[in-house]
Length: 404
Ligand SMILES: Cc1cc2nc3c(=O)[nH]c(=O)nc-3n(C[C@H](O)[C@H](O)[C@H](O)COP(=O)(O)OP(=O)(O)OC[C@H]3O[C@@H](n4cnc5c(N)ncnc54)[C@H](O)[C@@H]3O)c2cc1C
Image (cartoon, rainbow, N blue to C red; front, side, top):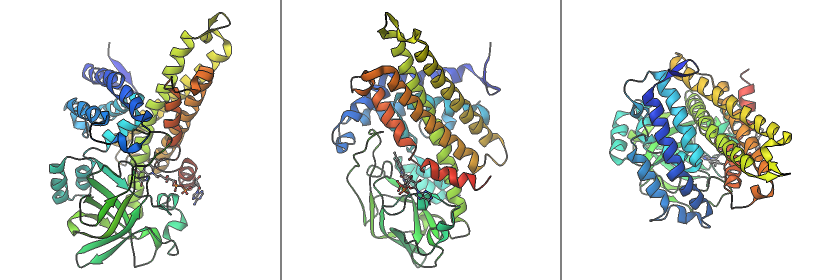
């Protein structure tokens, strides 16, 4: 009997991939994620010999990194989109920081190809490396995200990372903030930078995909943060960095805000796909604990308040999953994909749900939920970061609301 989700058939091959990734998440990602989370110094997470590298290599051996084509040539676009949601739910249930790191593998050639820049794509194909997306600056977080707010076009707002012309090429100076994911690791950078001259504020920008080893580029120390500690984070500095025009993807006020909207739409949908897995991790842990923990002479799952809480958590996971899967499929089967406000609704709803489900899971564990012995407190910290990551949720909501 065939299995379906959102009206799309889940084939035997898809189930086999899901099951393989499920086992990998349990056997490798979860234990390695817990080990990396406990490292006191975030520099140790990316040091030579860290279990991070072995986990990433093992995942690469599964052949599922970076390209949805790896899910199988016979899948329809809708099945491929659904499969991607299923895979990310599993990897992020294992460890979201590791899963995000994996999703940054080989992003540079894909992005260059999407811009039709085959020369840059071939250059990065050969390097086969982790990529980062550098937008946020020390003095400009939401300023840079808010592509449809008037402040985006305000020339009084001065960027920390500036680009100027040098004949056909470009010179970059300044810095990106310590919040760039994989910032101190990445071999390639998708860089959003603002032109020094020409006015119109942050909207007057350019997108580059460039190698991180160009002369004049340096990296900061890995950031010490509360959650998602297996995900490296760090500053990138630019000191008179000469960038060939071949690494330019696009530029100019006319297109830059539109291109950033497209990036943010994809990033928001990806965040939603990922944090369904975090919500499920929290729910699974709470359910297992509630069946095992005895108080008042019975497993606590038999108490009405615990049952009700678990059902509320279950409902949030189900709603988050179905919203994300529907939008992910629509994004590939509809000619115009989905709208920005749909992607934002998924990011805001799913990350808020993951945070609430993780908080309810801690309540279900009682005091044990607060100690390091159980990984639920880690899942809570991982989920907490997500309501700020890739756009703070209320900022995204304001931007989406202005489109209603
Ligand atoms: C885990 C994690 C991973 C990240 N990864 C990356 C990455 O890979 N690349 C990257 O470039 N960045 C990354 N970021 C940065 C992230 O995009 C920013 O943190 C986010 O955009 C918010 O910016 P900020 O932290 O500077 O907060 P601020 O912009 O200073 O906002 C602070 C508060 O003020 C509110 N606020 C600010 N401006 C407005 C406004 N105009 N109207 C209404 N309210 C406003 C916000 O909603 C928020 O509550 C990451 C962040 C996290 C937590």
